[in-house]
Every structure is written in structure tokens, then in C-alpha cells.
Picture 1 (cartoon, helix red, strand yellow):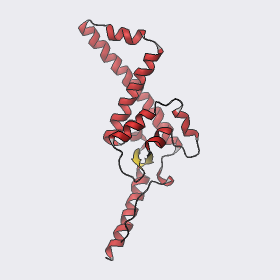
Picture 2 (picture 1 turned 30 degrees about the vertical axis):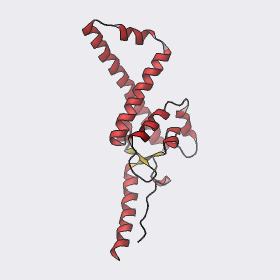
Picture 3 (picture 1 turned 180 degrees about the vertical axis):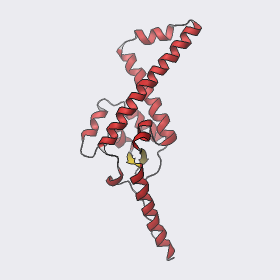
Picture 4 (picture 1 turned 90 degrees about the horizontal axis):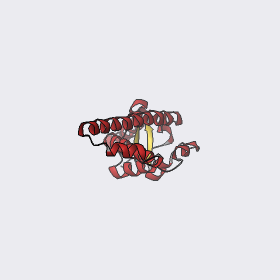
Length: 167
């Protein structure tokens, strides 16, 4: 019997509205994470009396702010999406990152996805008709609505099972 291969279709992709909600939620959480890291570094500096790192971060200017922000973003997305396939924003909107065949991405694919978020104007890449960002296209990943994705996958697996009954 021919085995039915699952592929992610447009019918299970997250909408632009959900993707925008993910972006806003995750951005706010990254800002909070950056604040928390700064707070912890401040406490450590106060306890040790060594303010060198804090002074460096505050006096380095805009470029260091961008680098710190990118590091926080890289840690945030790579950690959450590698471990769960979802960022906190994706948990809230019930979406998830998958590969074309519906499988979970590997660490390397998530790392590429996270690094591609640093491409200037990546956020504007969603304005196209398909609503895929460059970090999706380059890493060959998809953001799907979990319930639609599961329902479609279960339907296809059920059809495959029906085909096996006659064997």
C-alpha cells in the first residue's frame, strides 16, 4: 500500500494576525528578559563591588544595545523553539514551528531560524502574500495553527490506517 506523506499546506498555517501577535508577545518578553538580565548583573555588581561590566554596557552606546538585544533574542528563540517548537507567544496563540513534512525542527534548523531574525527588515518580510518571513523561508520552517495541524495529520493517518485494513 502507498504510504501517505504529510506536507504542511496553507490550510494549517498560522494567520498573519497570529504571527503578528506572536511577534508582539515575544518582543515584550524579550524586553523583560533583557531587563531581568540587567537586573541580575546589577545585583552581582553590587555584591562584588565590580561595576566594570555594568559601566561598559551603559556607556558603550547604541551598538552595544543592539548586540545585547540580539543576544537576548537568540537565546530566547533558540532555547524555547528547540525545546518545545514554540516560543511563549506561540504557546499563547496555539501555534508551533514545524518542517515541511510536519516533523519537529532540529537544533540547527532552529538556530538558523533564530539567526535569520537578525536580518535587517526581517519583520517587513511578512507583508508578502504568503505571510512567511525570511526566517521561515531560509530555515525551511513553517508556523502552523496547532489544532488545525493535528486534525489534518490525524485525518491523513486515519486514511492510511483504513488502507492497511484491506491488506
